[in-house]
Length: 284
Image (cartoon, rainbow, N blue to C red; front, side):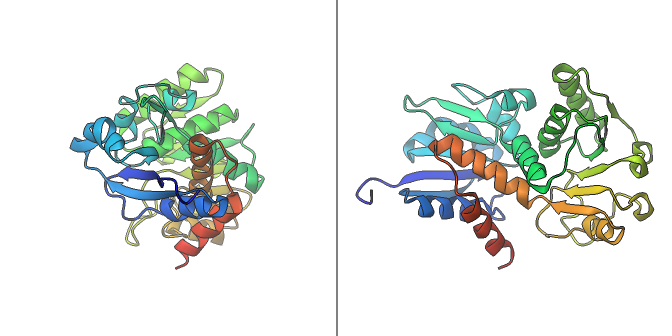
């Protein structure tokens, strides 16, 4: 295959320098002998449309991931088909350039979250779930959680408009699931929940406050933090100390990447190769 032109894939975001995606996808291409490379493209919001309508074709990009802050704006720029997951969240994180030059999009974040939980042996059905955050990543997680039929989902975000939008989506697609939004952390009744998910950026910086009170956490609770860098946020450290089962967002990152790889190539992704590349990157 080496004589063929190298296929180009990548990630668009602003900023993108912190991303772990390239190591994971490039390891997969290499392992499968695919002559392709995954690059990072820093695209400011005012250049997003130009990227979709011009750069993609000039650079002959075959497929790309979309990250913060572009996922929702990118949804409106898809010219071919969008998957149900993308339509539901009105956001895309994976785009494929079709042979006729049109762009199709999907959102693998929610399914990535579900696959990670499944691998960990954590079930959602019939459980009481609390979600911190209602923004981009939280929306995908919320739709994935409600699809698995929890007993109750309670959501809090300091930005009430985000919470309202999310509630509208969940009511439309999952009217049978009990979902409530609350206006304070206390109203979430965290001590009574089985699963606590942090989908806010709080915890990325070492001086970030702890959103929950340590006494709210108890053994038997599963605490999931979408943040994976640092690998152990203050929330996860406190949760471990309280005897909770914990996980960071690295597994979700892996599985959304696996699904994106399959969306682009139609091939089975080498999951263990991608996982190893991620672990080496984060421990470097």
